[in-house]
Amino acid sequence: MTATSVAIRAVRPDGTPHRPKQSWGNPWTYLLATILVAICIGPVLYIIIGGFRSNAQITEDPSGFPSPWVFSNYAGVLVSGEFWVAMGNSTISAVGTTVGVVLLGVMASYVIARYDFFGKGAMYSLFAAGLMFPITVAITPLYLLVRSLGLVNSLAGVILPQIAFALPTTIIILVPFLRAIPKELEEAASIDGAGRLGFFWRMVVPLSLPGVVTVGILAFVTTWNGYMLPLFILNDASLFTLPLGVQNFASQYSVDTARVLAYTSLSMVPALIFFSLFEKRIVGGLQGAVKG
Image (cartoon, rainbow, N blue to C red; front, top):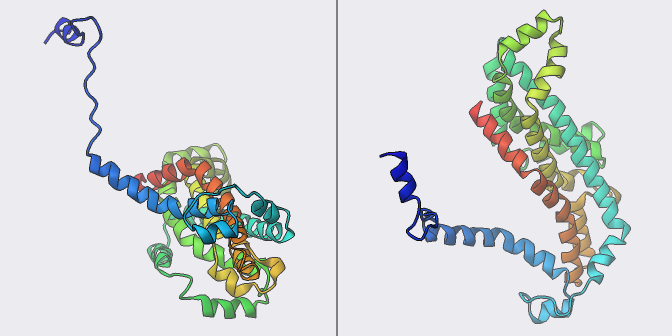
């Protein structure tokens, strides 16, 4: 088939270009995807919209829309000091955990990925086994350990265990990134006079940045939504993170359902925004880990 005949077939008799029909696939697939998205987003939208309703509206029609829209619920939560104290505690806990997870995870992953030593496989298997060890199983001995260290009722007592439980996922993701770095780069860096630490900070960390960003985001979001560990460690309301703040607020204003929904909505917003902004980073980092 010549290029002239292809060009003729690509043009209709009226002179307009002929475009092949686009296949949209199976409509049942789109229907199933829509149902799954609605199941996931529906509760979140219900909570957010419910915060704009009055208690009378919720009692009269629990699934209806605000009529009229009530903004005083959100305004009352935003001007309360309790919400911002919990927000600050969650920020300190999430940032501290993320920094610790990233630093320790990169260092441990670098050793496992780049060096051969006795017990290397056992160490990697130990971290992999940590993925199957939920925090709920270890909460009692963990509490006893934190109490013996004198860290009960402190944010440090929450941050340190969170770092420990986030390290297995971090190492599993980062090790393939670090293994994929060519050894020729390390040899060239050593010829140029760079030591192991210099090669690590100047070459390894920048090259593994997609994986580092991924594990940092996962650690931040997981810590922000953490509930079980702060529940056991923190007793002082001034140290409550947002999940505990929601529970405490709901117990204080149990009859004010609309205001509780507003508080819950505002506590979700930072994590939702953070996750939405870096969603592509997470997917890209996980794809790189699989390819590595």
